[in-house]
Image (cartoon, rainbow, N blue to C red):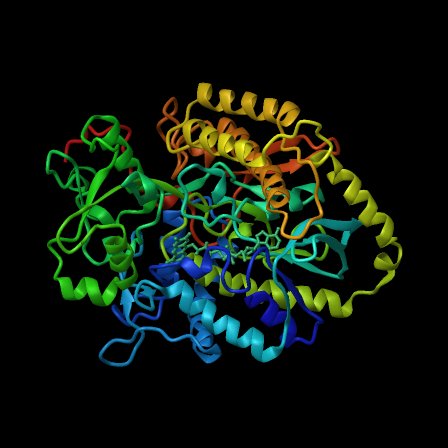
Length: 562
Ligand SMILES: Cc1cc2nc3c(=O)[nH]c(=O)nc-3n(C[C@H](O)[C@H](O)[C@H](O)COP(=O)(O)OP(=O)(O)OC[C@H]3O[C@@H](n4cnc5c(N)ncnc54)[C@H](O)[C@@H]3O)c2cc1C
């Protein structure tokens, strides 16, 4: 949305295709805790440089520092601008933006609208899109980006309402379809987040970065079973929530007495993993997250959405703890971009969670919402620049009718099966496989098993439908989701096997320590036969030298003294 606004503002003819409904799909509407911007309202020592440092340390020092610098410098202006679009955010008694503390941030830096911040961000963006009369194609799933020689020329999409394939000519395209959270069994990400952008980018020659470094958020519900995997905002820990094991111990005192529950997400997730693994978890396989010591009024004011939701689930968090376990949350990696948020394919851009490199191995809480606004604006402006100055030469070389038939032909294997293979069955198999074998604790044996199974799925069990093309053919979308999920999971598993160390959310039980040799990125591309190719690449560093930074020491078991 931010990219479309920026492109429209420069006068480019702009279309947005959305898998689902405008403003009601994807992660942003459900984002909770807030938007990080170093205004320094709660502590005047805060500024973009501290934000930069926190982001890089939190990211395991493998972030692209050029991108981090742009993020931290621009986050405050993009936030203020959201209010000019129509969003409203909480203020303190001096009418400055209220800022809460989240994990890994040196100061309270997270601006918010209660614990419904994403919805408020979306509201402003929606108003601005409507004001500008930007064309929005809802229920329009982009399936493939088209390229002629070195640059993009358009894309093919599935129009859900009429059940038709559509072809678009475009001088520039921005992929902003978010990450691939749906790959995992327990996940916060809503249904459509299958990693389509990753797959489409790879298919036309762009690269992915650090796909193995997926973020597991420490506090998803694990019980009751019906809501397992659902999100609990980091704002709960920001506003005083404590973690306990079944022995009644506030176990973060043992792992990290300084930061306690507000250590970075990857760190806290690993601690919860050890508590449960070593027998100090509940019978459901979780630990307790408690707010019972926090004044009820504060919970009602600061965390109203979380409170409402918990009450709906039959849990009154003012009186009883929640039972939690890490859940998959955020794609730290993604499509490789430069400082224009352009990929290595000319005029193909990526923004938001689809783009990788900014957050390194672990995104700090509330650092995604600013990333969307900052990267969105830059990608939108550069895409508009490319479109307005570019010629139609390459586009005129393409016979789009033939192109459409070719893509339909490529998709025909989704429908050619006699007996049919239900996409939902395969989807669930992938989700279980990723959770059990490429999840929070990995090792060589598990990863090899995952890769063998992926290969077997690819050979024999990709979804096959009896037909496509009918209006709202959910099975077809499901089948295309599975295609994307398979590519993303394979990239993750291959990169996890290659990264011979533990760093951030990538915990190798067989290699539990970080290794200096791996202060590096892993880049994934696709060869002409569709095989994934991996290579190690040095990090982009500008200000901070990883050698000179003191990094948190992650636990390798629960037996920690002090
Ligand atoms: C429960 C939860 C809480 C969170 N809380 C916070 C928070 O407090 N602060 C923070 O900074 N971050 C938070 N995050 C993370 C943050 O919300 C996401 O990283 C961010 O919203 C992603 O934005 P995006 O624009 O990249 O993608 P999304 O907001 O997910 O939007 C992607 C859009 O692309 C569409 N799409 C997908 N595939 C296709 C396709 N093939 N064709 C066309 N359209 C497609 C989707 O339907 C969707 O509309 C949270 C995430 C979750 C799930």
